[in-house]
Length: 377
Length: 76
Image 1 (cartoon, one colour):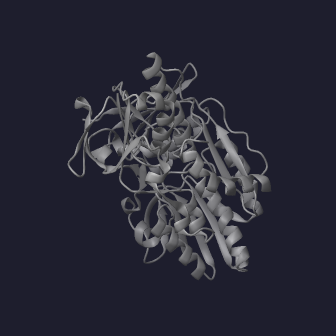
Image 2 (cartoon, chains in turn green, cyan):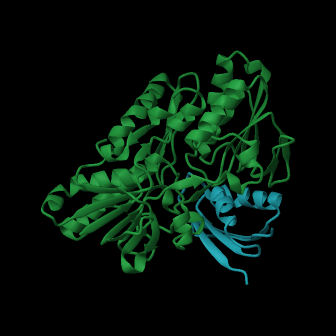
Image 3 (cartoon, chains in turn yellow, brown):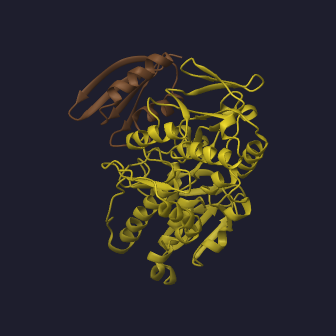
């Protein structure tokens, strides 16, 4: 049985490690082989980028060697997939090699696409890559006061990030002694402050407390970088001195190129996490087209579900569980406090008041991630 | 020729139905219709408000059982 995991991010790495442990006996008996193909020999802790953007972490703290995170029974190649040939159960890589499989796990992830919004690359700061997070930090350091506008593209990774940015900005400018010279304004694509109703209800008085203006039903249309004006699809305009955006995201180019899914998102069964129409192809993490948050925690819980099923199918011929839509997101709420949102397909989150212990837990998790991604936590 | 694309946004808290509509409407052609399936009561009001504000067209909104079927035509 050849299991091929494509993608070495959170979803792919947890999947490969979890499967390796569950199928250790079968692997050592030569009945199962697990191979991972990744685009990089390094693994980034992506939530750390927000800390980099505010000078609270340095980029070197975000990385580990990918090979060091993998179980030794996993065959690992830095050789991204160039072409999926699902009808032939094989993929062709950038180096020209062909990998055949019996079970394929696609975990290629997502990428921000600021270049798709006119003026965004030139006119806005963002923090979804190392380079952009460092640039944003430098801009924040140089900022002496004025209008700081925050806006959000759709779809995007880490749906809590826009809310967290506002608290981080408030803390940052207070610490620099210029909060009274800074006007903060938050723009959000739908008719409330966050897509999760309970987060929106919680954020409203919190934003009032830290003096954040808000505008909802605001989807970024274009940015006039020269005149520092952001225009919305809804017909409004705002002037800014510093613009911070969460850019819209897409799945990876190879997914679109091979017609596996519009926007790079693969049509996926919400419970089995199998690619629609393909019984031996699983999709996990950001790559799915599911109406589920694109976050590491969703990737983690999805990976656990498919690993249990792949292992049980190999051992007893049947899957044993469904993915229930579980997501768990920390929410950094400023002043060294945090809360969290946990929900699934049927149960909305019930937000608790932010607390210092929850912030310490989040800070601890920034290190515990490396245990989690090894499939141990 | 225009097409209808069905988006299943039932039982989702994040991203919600309107966020799904905004995301998917980027990838269909002008004149195409998106039929959004939603179990969120608020969507029946939120989505028409956004559609009107942006300048797309509401084709229909119907509740079948506990599921809202909301049809929107991309107008620009």
